[in-house]
Length: 229
Image 1 (cartoon, rainbow, N blue to C red):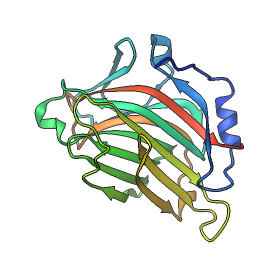
Image 2 (image 1 turned 45 degrees about the vertical axis):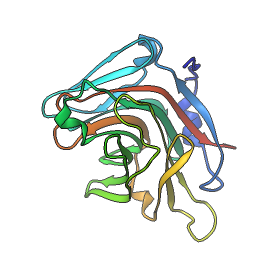
Image 3 (image 1 turned 90 degrees about the vertical axis):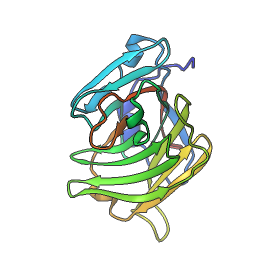
Image 4 (image 1 turned 90 degrees about the horizontal axis):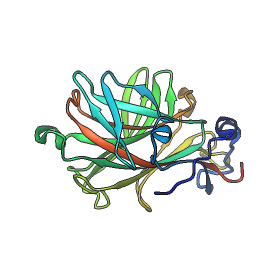
């Protein structure tokens, strides 16, 4: 977990990044091992009515309160073509009745009421890719019985990538891919990616319409851009 923080010129690097193809290799420009209060403070709340944050020695702990469906925290990195990764756990302190519908997640291109989301349900072993705009949320991929998804208190190494295609028949579209560890678990192509104008990259957790009492932890956050950039 001894990850080095590299926060210099992150925003400018990410905004200048340009992929030659959706399958471009990625290079890390931001790493956060959550090993200190200062490191955990680098993640800024993006949304969530009642989101209590704290930390053990090596992770950010999030507890959701009343009338709160989800909580999201953005990284310092802004950009269109990005990959975000984090190790997330659904903790056993979560009320039993809530555990089955609780999810762990990541976000890209978040802002102005729009975003791409990767949602992982530890107890359902389900993965969803969601495209949200001001018109509402649309599930662009749903995968069930995903063996790579781990359960209560287990580390789920999530990774979400959104990169615009610049060549071929899909030029101009966004390729969205989701991984757990090294395993590709869901993918989709968005022909209307221009409707999402946001640039925030974020980690998030939640559960249905009311996640009161949910507890999760987040660790080892990494943001990457296409290489070369």
